[in-house]
Image 1 (cartoon, one colour):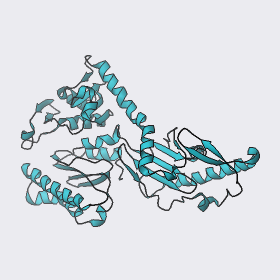
Image 2 (tube, rainbow, N blue to C red):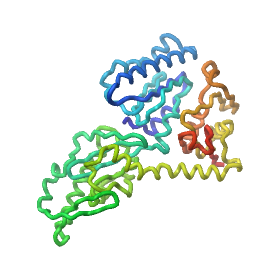
Image 3 (cartoon, rainbow, N blue to C red):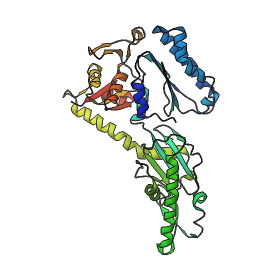
Image 4 (tube, rainbow, N blue to C red):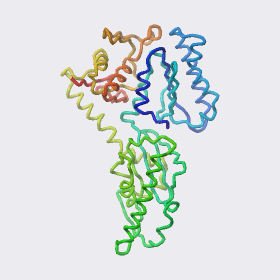
Length: 386
């Protein structure tokens, strides 16, 4: 996955001047990957038509779309895909992001980039990792609510004996240790004295080396995301002691993870992180219901949009796949709502997307959710700061 940082979002939000093309499509990672290029080719044709409707024609439109068209011939680039692809094109801008969201196909040509499909990355479908720890193998999985992908750890030493040597041969007795999730085996140290302390110290040293490699991987790893540890029970405290990761979940998956598939690890880990991701959304929904009727909570986009530009929106819920077309003039604060068939000829835009972006720019929270998760099932709902 190519990490999409808040800094990248900020740079896309602040792009100003000229038409911006935003393309979203689902991608196939294995099997008939040729359909990825076919989808993009068709969407680029749609983008060209949209540009023509905005009177951007011929060489100018071709130049704008050229970087994305060049991807169609780059077989190596297509060999490494995630669940979805987002492409942003404008004058002097070409950005692609392979992301863990299976986007619906979408082309938007507007005076700014269309970013609403990306907001699930910053709300309840958020990004987390599962770090599988055994003395024989270290594995890292990048996850969101729906997907899991193993991260290439490069030349990271993954075996304890590679780094520390075979320090366990002196420990020949084992006892069964049960946990709430599975059964593990751990060494018995006669007298529980120096031998045990030395062994724990060596494990700690090994995990410090692993943690250092995690910090300097060639691929991007979002160290600010939650990490769920999976491993036999006596290893997890040692890693927590060794790591500099700021958000290791207190609860882990205890037991030998070697027999679990990535999908099984992902499903068990989601049970741990889901309350973390959903807690803020649930509290915000309850707060909306409490404030409704006080002037500080509304479903009306004609109230939400000016408030978002003013920095008054504390929280906004937006329904995925739902768009409200229209135009907004920040100076006159005039809003004009329009029908779908009118939007291409007069430069209208998705007003929900604009409200979400302005909320984000002013430090508010954005929850991009299924429509039934928006309070009372509306297209958008907002809580005002004052």
